Amino acid sequence: MNLANLLLNSWLHHANVDRLFSLWEAIYPNQYLTSAREGPGTFAIPPGNLDTQSTPLEPFSSNSRGQFYTSASSWKTSTFGYTYPEIQDWNQTPAQLKANVTAIVNRMYNPQGTFPKRAATPGSQTKSWSVALNVSRFDLQGESFTVRVFLGDIPENSEDWPLSSECAGSFTVFPPPHQGNGPYPTLTAYYEIDLTKDLSDNGVDPTDVAAVEKWLEGNLNWVVQKVSQFRS
Image 1 (cartoon, one colour):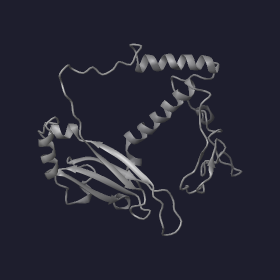
Image 2: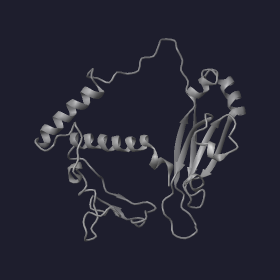
Image 3: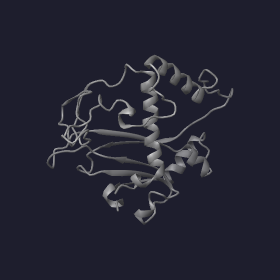
Image 4: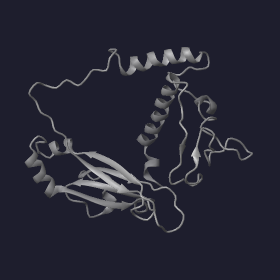
């Protein structure tokens, strides 16, 4: 079992993504999904398939006859018997809902009426540091894996890696399904881990380039861990 499935913050994160997307749908009722060609394919959709709003979302069945939900049939949360406090769509026209949800979003996230630009102090300089990860999804021949970046020594016990105070961040890669043992397609996955705060916490001034480079040379480490190694 993937440990992320057991973490409360993971459930809250995905629930909020669903909520935010529902808000967006209410504000833009005529925009939803653009058809596109499937790349490497999935467990249910063959490579190169044209994905549309009518593409079956297997394995999520909508009835006992073996029919599956589609993007079109699962568009509204009301289909599944729930909604969010901001979306009271049962007694409003689409135009009313759009106006009301827009007002609520602005009141919650933009109370001043405009999104202010970040103000820079005259004469000040800021500098940020990050690690860019660029890997192929099939680097481990179809196995899922996690790249972990450490600022300091890597703990000897791999079970300590995820929660180590030296772990600056991690990136888990889930390759799509692939038949056979190769050749594997080239599918690049990219991720970036910010190091600026960690540098400051370790007493390194982020604006001092020479000092940062010297410190990172002696303390920046990384490791790759198969997902199967930390499942229970």
